[in-house]
Image 1 (cartoon, rainbow, N blue to C red):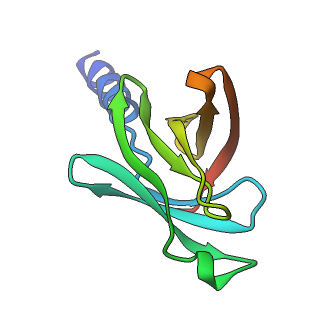
Image 2: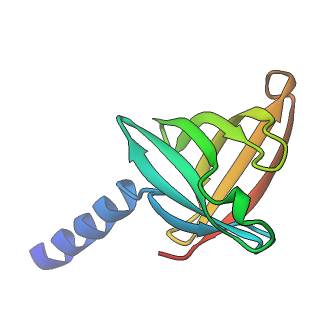
Length: 117
């Protein structure tokens, strides 16, 4: 019985501390984003682009801070440089939901990214 309880707590703890740090493929498959710790926040940079080498190295996630099960900060469209209020949240270990919003969060768009590593 103690072993089962310890195993359950171990698994619960692993999911409670899940992190989006890693390499992610964006939903249309045209780029990968590497998410790192930057000080106490998370940030993300284009690590590969199918269409343009000039995109590689551009920062697309800025100052993402944990707020419960969500990280909130800014998202930048690498193509045009537009900055949005953003948030991201894990959907299991392999999927990251990314949302960018305008008009104080009234209009939002998003993608689901897949973990590469």
